[in-house]
Image 1 (tube, helix red, strand yellow):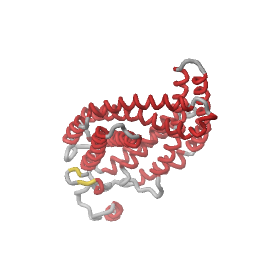
Image 2 (cartoon, helix red, strand yellow):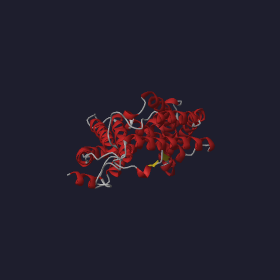
Image 3 (cartoon, one colour):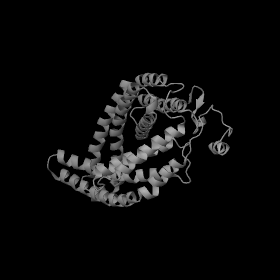
Image 4 (cartoon, one colour):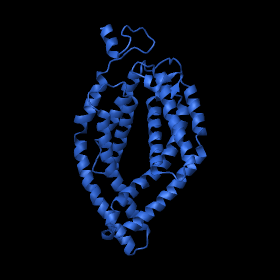
Amino acid sequence: MTAKGLRIAEIDARTPPQSAARAILRDRLGCVEGLIKRCRKTLPLTSAMVHELRASTRKAVVALDSFACLLDPKARRKLHKRLGRIRRAAGGVRDTDVALDILRDVSPQAESLPGLDHAIAQTEAQREAGSRTLRDAVERDAGRKLRKLRRRLLCGLPCTPESGPASLRELAETALTGAISRSRAATTADLALIHNLHSLRIALRKLRLTLELFEMCVPVTFDLTSSVRDLVTLLGRVNDLSRVAAICDEISSSAPHNTASAAVASLAARFGLIRDRRHAHALQSVARLDALLLTPLEDAVRATRPVPAAGSVDTGAGAPGAARSASA
């Protein structure tokens, strides 16, 4: 996808930030618009489509936040709000999809796990209710309002900003430094509490998406993005098991006290024990997070040097390294 002739693949560390913002935001927001259109034509909504829609809204929000200093605050807030509404609706369905996957993975043991079939049936009903909410959100937007807000946002981007970062690299450093700091701050909470561990996961996921957004600006010797993704996946599994245990607990509590409800309560306890084991394993990985990931990433970000904005006089005529050598 292009923006004023600039393609995503053409963006590098020396691209003027407003040009990069225009191209990236058009791409990210356009992706959400396209998925909304597909969702309206594909009913019932598949698990894969719901997952893709939620992921695309997250990427769009991270781009909005990263380029916030260049954007009209009012237009950005409106887009944030609309994207958030879609993401939350998709998130509710996605959570039940993950819960169903976990429950169905153990369904061959149904005879030895009384209450499992009942838990699956109730979770399927929750999924259908969530799907209706998501369909309503998609139908209300239909991509038109989002497209209108995107155009307003991009029209407000200055061709030559009066102030702010001179290069995309400079903006990337600010965004990544903030994401690293927020991730580090999240590790200082009491991670024995599941909701604090989930907050750390959210911070790391935003860090991963920021890394992906600015991968052309941060030279690293190992795949930091993959390392962050692996840890996010590990923490996500703890959160998924916690959610399944909570769903089973909720089903048991809301049902009449009988054999079925007691069986589902036992199932909740079983998933709670599995979650606790995964939680302990996750804490071991988090203990090494700063030394093995956050500090090396911070060093990589700091090691990058400012480079001239595209269009300025540059005897290096190419790679950032050449420009630095020429100015040395």
